[in-house]
Length: 560
Image 1 (cartoon, rainbow, N blue to C red):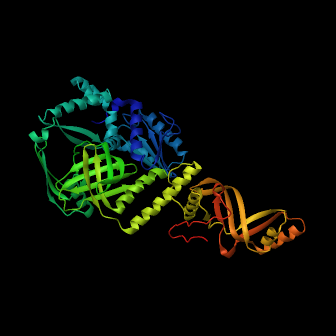
Image 2 (image 1 turned 90 degrees about the vertical axis):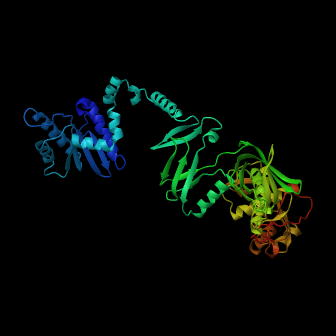
């Protein structure tokens, strides 16, 4: 229904033009409505693209602006144009709600003669054309015209004049009509953008038996490997994943059943997801690992899917941080397929360890079952994973265990960091061994700087002279840098049974000691034979000597 320009009035005309200009240019330019109705400086609407400016001047002249009695309108247009030119636009557009005569159009275009500006006219024909392209804009401004006609026939609700209430009323009424199409089936529907989605629903539990609906796919062409595998899992095992056959993969889809559904479809994209089987999902489940009849480990979870297909059944269990998917054939001679996926993201070490232990159990191989309160719903025998996979899992488990122990000792709990540098991994391993009461060699301590207190003795002089000698250096607070944090372990003892002073600093300190100026002298000492200093938490010191334990980090040489 076209806009009746004679009836909209000046304010309505301005609003319609503003809406059209926004719709035409909003994707590529900035649109500004200047100073409300009437504008200023000959500008009603300004469209800006970079440094280029396009000006729109709106004149609600229903009868145009011929010469004679309407010459005042031409004067007004000329003055508006002159004011606009002070702003230096590249384009100037006159917008009017009438169809111009040749003389009127020539008058407007002549305004730009001799000036660096492009002059254009949007008259009624141009506006009607733009509104036909942007039909929703036109519809929003013709509602009053339609309402008047609708009231004559008592159809105000058809125009949704009461807003969302009328939408609900009309949808409910339409749903009632759909319910009358068939005794056993009905269709629920929803709008998603420009698409209408239909959802078939049985009116009673036996609808599929009394009035079966059969969907037949004909001429399924070659599928990509991942599509073929998805079809196998879905149809063969009833796995609850969406399967998509794109356009061109299916030649024809035929639906047989109630008259309002039965038809043949071509050039369609087919999507499906198997129906949920019983028992209902969401019930408690348990993943159990077995050695014969003996349970070696069990982990709680939630049964999220239990399905059946033409060749077997599918089970999916959600575990904290992980998901287990089992495809179990009805033929006991065919091996089951087990897939366990997990993510340690945002988990604390304790929770991550539980997930990783499930992974390691599966990697080792052996018998397992998925159990619910009603008994086992699936299970089988898992072959062992390659040695490299198991070795990697073992190292990851060691990392998580180290972090768990250190967090508990420092009472700083946080989720696993996104990354751990090699240096941080070494520091973390050292911290774990120290907390456990072990002595460790620190690769980061090739030397130490000590300050003399001025006391002289044969032992001090022997050390300063370069003779290897035991060194024990208490450290008040030992911290470990990790993931942007500083984890404080407490006081440690830094020591080595055979350390010497570096020649330069030892000689200077020895001279200062002999001159009575030894207090405050600094000496750099280092373990003999290129070794590193050893660390031990003060609480773990029980004797004069402690044997260091290896770090046992793959790919990293043990420090001496």
